[in-house]
Image 1: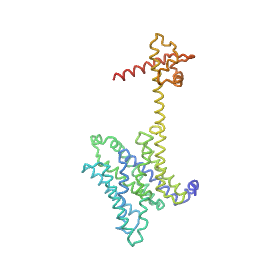
Image 2: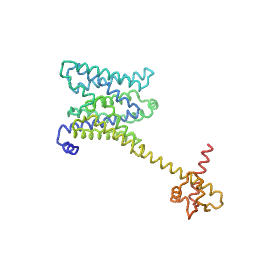
Image 3: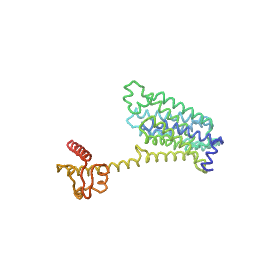
Image 4: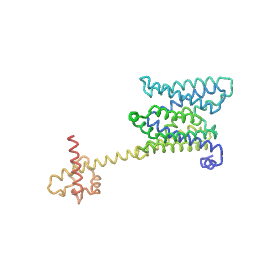
Length: 376
């Protein structure tokens, strides 16, 4: 099945509809909440929380003896929240920085989770088969009830973001000022973090523990390259996340032996790469083009200043001079001379040039500005 056949079956096949809807909703909510993690410079938070959720899944299975997804994800949610509050406690109660705390909790919880999974796999109970799927995810196991749960969480997140929009925005960019306004910054911080934990837990079944942080951060990182507005960034991140989920699912379904989670992450990585290169504001391509243009303009204005110094020695500013005089200037080229003529800064007759009134005024302003900068 190719991608075209996939999209034609999307409107009739129940399984494809469920998986596509699930990955699209998951991508949207991860992009929306990931924007806050990126702007708060907590990029490792998603990685730490997703890894911290693993022992919760294992413990939930050991306690109940079943692989009910609701029970397992509830265990993951509790474990993820515990890991999150441990991180907060380490940062506030010790002299360790947040990145150190995140690394400690990530390794500790993930190691404990792997130990529990190894213990479970060696038990005679055959019901434990498939728990390792939570490491890399298995989108094919999504049920329509899971999709509705994701949709409900996404709608709740959206309402909370709209309700606390002013508080979230102020806290992101100036936490100290938020305190002076009387807002409970601790409550707002816990609220944001709790929803991030919830979104990560919902994505474990689809993307898995190992790759969930990429699903959280990649759409937000891509959206950040296109705008300076928080609202637009959140909308773009949600769209990029949903797009990555749908296209990743389509590619995975149209090829054999391609896991959906890793493919979704790779699509999101491509979106990030395109954004880093082609975004008009921060993209590498446009930044390089602006750099080259600025360098050419600088060289052009240096040539014009040099011509101004020559013209200043004559009473008549329009007095013609030989072009070969400009050869004494290191940066002079015939191309720059033609460019100055096109800008109506100079006129060229035969082998002679002269400044126009517009060119003289421009050069005088450049010269005066250069003199002020030198004196400063």
